[in-house]
Image 1: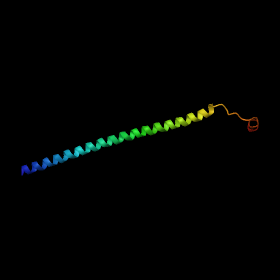
Image 2 (image 1 turned 180 degrees about the vertical axis):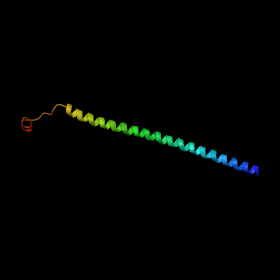
Image 3 (image 1 turned 120 degrees about the vertical axis):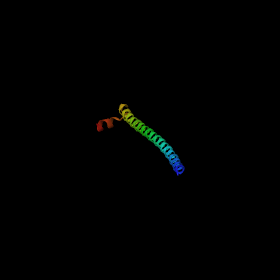
Image 4 (image 1 turned 90 degrees about the horizontal axis):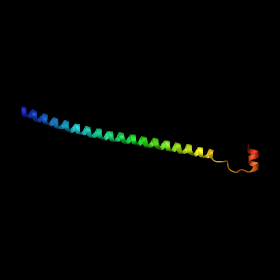
Length: 79
């Protein structure tokens, strides 16, 4: 009877080790996914900042350009 109980306990310990291994693997995968999500957020934020910066630079370039040559009548009647 004791040997039978010992065999049952050994099986339970083996199952516990399997479950712990699975939990560790899932935890590792979760950490990898979280890291990838953070990297994607950083890339997305950098892209948004870059596109906003480019748009802002384009508007500044338009303001800094000298006015186009306009005809005398256009300048006279549109001001």
